[in-house]
Structure formats: C-alpha cells, structure tokens
Image (cartoon, rainbow, N blue to C red; front, side):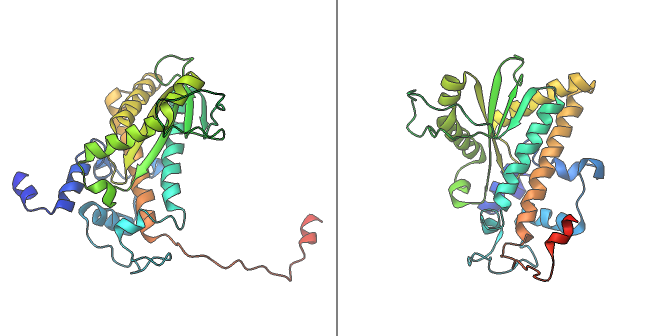
Amino acid sequence: MEELRKQMTPNQLRLHEEHCKRGASTWLTSLPLSEHGFTLNKQEFRDSLALRYSFPIPGVPNRCACGQINGIEHCLTCPKGGYVHMRHNQIRDLTANLLEEAGCKDVTTEPRLLPITGEEFDHKTAITANDARLDVAALGIWDNPLEKCFLDIRVFNSRAPSNRSKPVEKTLRRHEEEKKRNYMDRVIQVEKATFTPVVFSTSGAMGDDADRLYKQIAKSLSTRNKNTYADTIRYIRQRLAFCLLKTTIISLRGYRGRRPCRVDDSVDYNLLYL
C-alpha cells in the first residue's frame, strides 16, 4: 500500500485518506438489497467509481447552467438545482428516522430554538436570531430519557479548496468546532439541553461526534431489535453511505436549468369541482 501511495497525486492521497475512514466505503461491500436502498444502476455505479478515484465523468456538460466551468468540484458545490440542500436534508431525515427506530421520543426535524432574552454567549459567532432552527431534536439520545439533544448536520464538499488543503481529520474537526461555536452555548444556556454536531464529507467520512452519535443509536437499536451491535452499526453505516453516495452522484447529472411553466388556457378548472 505504501508503494501505491507514493505513486498517488496529492488529490488522490486526500481521497484515499477519506475513503479509509470508517464507514466511508461500505457501499462497495454491501449486498444489493433493494428493500434497503442498497442498489445502484450501471450509470450510478460507474459515476460512483469515477468519484472515488477522481476520474473524469463522461457525458457531463462542459459548462454548468450557472455559467461556470463544470467539473466534479463545481457540481458538488453549485446551489442551482437544490442538490446541496437535498444532500443535507436526506441525511437529516435519515438520522431522524434512525432515532425513532431506536426508541427516542419527541423526535422533530427543524425545531425552532427558544428566543434570546438577554443571555450572553462566549463566542461572537453564536447564532442569536430568534427564528433560529437546528436540524433534529429528540429526547433520550444519550441514555437520559428526559434530556433533549439537538443535532445540526453539515455535509461539506471535501474537494473544495478550503477543505482539501488540510488533513481530513483536521477538516472534520474544524467544521465540528464551527457548529459548536455557533450553537452549543445557546443550547446549553437557553434550552437546557445538549448539542451534537453531525458532520460528513461528500466522500462519506464522518466526524468524531457523528461517529459517537450513530454508535449510540446502534446500541439502542440493537437492544430494541434483539440484533447484535456489530450487525446494527454496520447496517446504519450502510444506510448513511448509500444516502450520501446517491445524493452526491445525483448532483453530477441532475438538471440545473429553469423549465418553462406552461399553462393550458383551454382548461376550464371549474369543471374539476363538479
């Protein structure tokens, strides 16, 4: 392996480092079980391999609908088409579903935080808007059934210049610390709850806090379903890996233009209510 690493470019070394993270490559060794969403068609599989090894993606337009030169890095970052938000929202919804399956109570998505009434926080970057929301909240995540925990999710493009210049571990930690500076003081002081940042890269690497969260979910879920912990955590990592993979490769070929809205003036909509 060391001999192969010596022949890799810096970009390939960085991708290799990410793919060696626990759970990042589970999609390659999973059985194609359609009932769990563990299937890819032939184009999705080829695109997944091209992403993994940083190969060119055939059939992708040279220019994006936003006017920029197209490429893997741009596809994963461009906001047109809503694919960046979709990637985030799918991980949010999957996490909420896993919490419900694990027996957590009062699981909600996009919970609104309590308003600020004079509280002061240590970090200047703390979010103080009264309409602030986090991604997921639930009771009983960390064993105490009456303790609420708030989660905030981030899926960052590991190929972006601001992320690829440092080792994966440091990049994951930087995003986690940024989330904590933004929300942790407010959640602890105002909500009297706990806060966990859930950080992923588009290549499937997850931060330490996210790793602890899903291990805790696996512990609760294995007890509830009478399965082994090893099988349960593997299943969770597979679901996360396929969720990230599918929402990432969709952004490579997904339509980003604006479709014309055609209205048929000949339709009498009043007839629909007869």
